[in-house]
Image: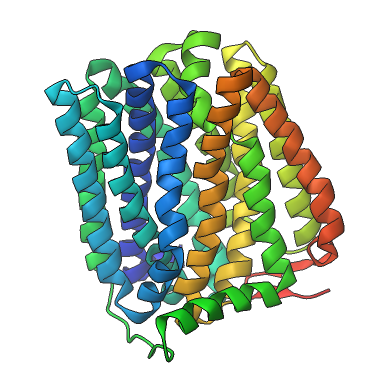
Length: 404
């Protein structure tokens, strides 16, 4: 493929895959370790909240930094800081410390590094490849990343079965290698900032609000996944409902990545072109239905399949949203717009984990997941009415969005 003839894309591709491997191992290991301390569903929810708070507080400052400074160096530094946070978790486990507060502090450090890194890392690809190659490059990067996210959780499960610090160490090593990949990218000139940091930050918010299709797409992801996320509760399902242990947990965490990887690989060969709005709404609806099936299932392989379908549906919505946000945003604003988008994504994932954990603590894990899936379907119906522009937009091409 011609993309691999471009040195910068190869370096970016390599770094992103290392990040995917580190994140997939890290997520499983953190969830397992936290659950083992007190066997509390609420603790699992708090992990999501702790990871989300830095994304909310630092989103706009991180976006401004991503647009005013070298994104390559920022991505490198934050990958290293993530590895440092994982080193703190290793020290806690090896010391035998079971005080949950110290683990939450280390997780908050990791969340801060991630919040500062994401706007820079997301803005890199659109500045590396031409606009007409973006959909293919994004889908290709995502497809391989999802394959790694299949192997990563399974590897994490095996490492945890040996000893949990091994999983944290493998994740930390992946982040360090990713940092070297980001360093291979070329430095780019940085556009001058506005009259103030606050002005630069608000400009990105206004940019999104003025584009109803973009606002509808990213807010749809926020509320649909906020209610429909079951990932945070997988340690409970693996242990108490499916009786699968740490290896089964790794497979369950890999299932969404398997579904997403297969879909992304297909989209890399056959990029989306038409019916973008209807496709987005249909796929998010499919995500909700798959979530309900998972919540009701007591069979391991049915649960695995439901999570795989959920991951596949989610991948389509991710591709559509990424084209809407990245390709149609000027390069000098991509960091800030990406930071605002990250608040929505972080809320849907991390805050969704808190919501799932809280409801599970009150009503049980099955009720939490099933009610969340139903909530996703309600959101779809409401957004179809609130954002007719989202429902009606049609052409989604490699050059961007063509209004109906």
